Image 1 (cartoon, one colour):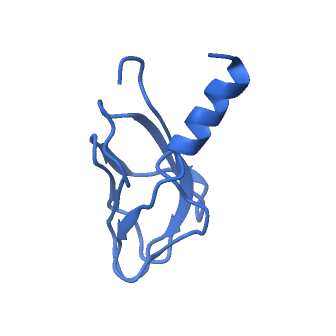
Image 2: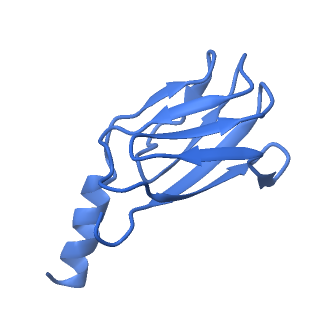
Amino acid sequence: MSPARAFAAVNDAGRRALDLACGTGTLATGSTDTAGTFTATGATGCTLTFGAAWATAPSCTVNELTVNTAARTTTVSTTALVVASGTSGSVYSYICIGKQGG
C-alpha cells in the first residue's frame, strides 16, 4: 500500500461517530476516535466511547486545555477513554493512536 493510500485509510478509520457521557458536556465538531476536543459541563469525570472498538487499547494522550496540563486521571480501553477527577467547565483535547497488530 502506498504511503498516501495508508494515510487515507487511517484518516477514513478516524471518522467515526463518538458518544460523550460528561454531564451536559459537548464534543467538538469534527472529533473522531483518533483526535478531538470536548468540554466537561456539570461533571467532574467524562467517558468518551469510541465509535468503533479498537482491536487493542490505543495509546492516548489527554490534555486539559483550561489549565494547560495533562489530564489528572485517564483510563483507556478498546471501547472508551475515561477522564476522572476533572473540573466542570474544563476543556480537554485528546489524541489516540492504534498499536501495531491492533
